Length: 367
Image 1 (tube, one colour):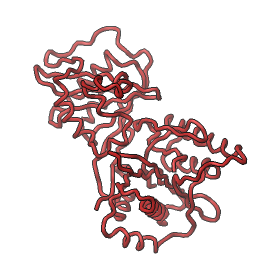
Image 2 (cartoon, helix red, strand yellow):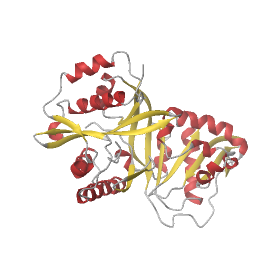
Image 3 (tube, one colour):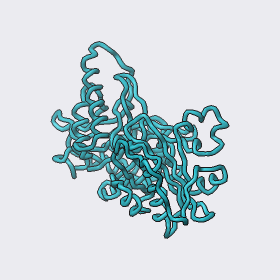
Image 4 (tube, rainbow, N blue to C red):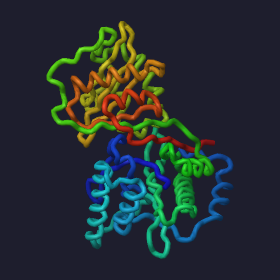
């Protein structure tokens, strides 16, 4: 299986809206939407790989014709049968496909949102292409590279990825990104062969909801630690740690505008709606700031947490203490999701009842 992930939620057959990346919907791209920094050898690579095209044909994805079949393909490829968030998006995908089928005579503007691979008239592979923008530059996110188990190992995933890269070039998009499971070394090697380079990787941790979980009594900590509301003076260190834990190069993908975390965000009326959904807590060891937790309250199934902490031998202890305090005193019981640099502070998340959902590696191509 070769896969990447991004999430969209369909409001109707004609509209889409992004949803936050931390839900399991991140494994799926709504197929209503239709930096590749091409290296100097890309044309040669594409020609060489295209010469090895497997049996079958490739064509544009059509939601009305392919939506239900591709939803089934994604469900199996990404093992989403028991994933509530993933199932929610799959249900919407299938429903959108049914509505389009019923809307006979209705014409929608042509838009390439991806491609499917057919063998003997059956769809056995899919790739989605999602447009984004970063600093006024267009980019594409390649997602949902899924191949039927019976047809894996034949080069279909490679052929679909090549087609997506060619489409990006033809439409003037020079940046293409993707995410892939860290353990999927077959896919990683394939992407590297096509010119993609490894970026940062992160663990996605999830905690199930517990209605009424907030403690009725105050939790006391050893005198070494103190948790306070985040203050102006904390921002300089918090910002430095955020830049390491959540690299700026991939923030275009986040549902959070990191500028809203600044204590001065309230001076900008455009940030008011973002800032009002945030709560932030600072952990001190004595007089030293050691970690900051930001909670993004959402209207979707899960709230998101963002943790800024220094990479140090004591990091896990600090993250664990801050999480414990938040869960004891400020958690409403709603499901939680948090991305954190891969392999860091894992014991702290385990100890506080979080489950590792996946480890994803960002990849992109560069000159």
